[in-house]
Length: 513
Image (cartoon, rainbow, N blue to C red; front, side, top):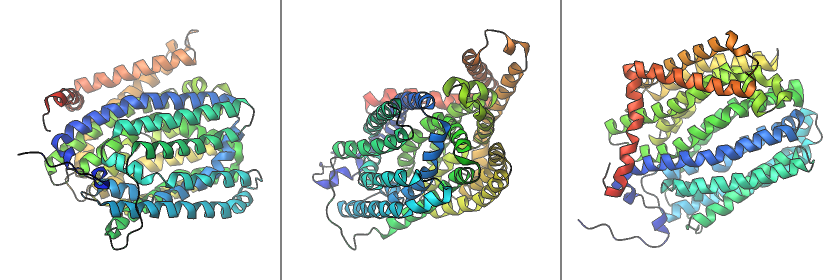
C-alpha cells in the first residue's frame, strides 16, 4: 500500500500518523537523545550552582526565592495545561492550535498585570522593600514565555526531542553565562533575576525558529472546549502540586527570614537538579508515546513498566548518595559556607525515595486523559503534607524537611498510587511489584554506605569531601547493581533496559515496533 500523500500548509505540523510506523523506536531514540543532551544541561546547571553559590550569599538566594514562589505559581496559569492537551489529542487542527495560542498569550498578559499589582503585597508580606522591583521585573517573563507554549507543544507532539534539547541547551547556556557575569560584577541577586528572563527569552525565540508553525486568527466553535477541560484539570493539578512544593518556601521565608530560606532552597535545588535531568526528559518522551498506545493495553503496560524501571535505575543511586553523604556533597558543590544546609539536604533526600514512583504516575494520568483524577489525588494527598509542613515550620527549617519527608513517604505517594491504579491498564499492585526490587537494592546500598561512613576507613586522612563523594558513589553503585544481579526481579529490570539497544539498531532497517 503506498504511503499517504504529503500534507502541505499548517496541517503538516499537526499530523502524527507518520509516527506510528516506528513509534517504539522513535520513543527509544528520543529517550536516548534526550538523556545524552541532559549531560550538557546538567553541566550548565552544575556550573550555575557551583559558581553562583560562591558569588552570591544565602540572603540573595532567599530574597529571589520569595518572589519566585509567587511567580512560579502564576506561571501555571500561563500554560493552563494546554500544551499537554495539544500533545495528547489524537487529531488536532490549525484552527484549534491557533485559538489555544491566543489563549496562552492572553493569559500571559493577564498574569503579567497581576504580578505587577501583587508587587506591593509581596513586599508587605515579607517586610522586604527590595522585593518590589524584583517582582515587577520578573512580570515580563509571563508575556515572553506565553508566546512559545504551543510551539513547544507541537515540537513534542512531533517527537522532535533532539530539537527540543538543542533549544534547552542554548537557553540554559545563555542564561548561565549572563547570571555568572552579573554575579561576578557584583550585582548580587540580580544575577538570579536575569538568569530567568534570559532563559525564557531565548527559549521563545528558538522555539519560533525551530517550529515552522505560525498561528492564525482566533476561531470560535472549533472544538477546543474538550481540550480546555483536559488542560483545565491539569492546570488545577499543577496549581495544587506547585503550592505543595512551595508552601514550605513561603512559610520559611515568612517566619525564618531570607538566610534560612536560602539554605533550604539551595538544598532542595541541589537535590532536584540531578533528578530532574532524568525525570523531565523521560517524561517528555514517554507521555507522547503512551498517548499513542492507549488502545493496546498490554503494550501500554509493558512500556510503562520499562520506563519506571529505567527511572528508578537512574535516580535511586543518586538519592542514596544524597542521604548517605549529604555533608560531603554540600561541601564539594556549594562550598563550606553552605554546610548548615547538610541536614536539610539529607532529610529531603529521604523524601526523594518515593518521588520517582509518584512522578511517573503523571505519565499514566496524562496519557489516559485522566487529569481530573490526577487533580483529586494531588489535592487529597496534599492536605496531609500541608499539615505536616505547618507543624514543622513552628520548630525549625530542619523540622520542615523532616515532616516533608515522613508525610511524602507514608501518606502522599500511597494515596496518589491508589488513585492512578483504580482504572486503566496499570494497577497499583503492578507499580509496587515493578518498583520494590529496585527500592530494596537502594536500601541495601544505603546501608553499605552508612556502614562505610561509620567505619575507620572514612576517617583516614586522604578521605576528604571530594574523595568521599567518589567513594560514596562507587560503594552505592556496586552494592545497588550487586543486589539487582542477585534478585530475579532485579535481573529482569536490568534486562528491560538492555532491550533498548537492539531497538536502536532496528532504526536503519526500517522495522516497526
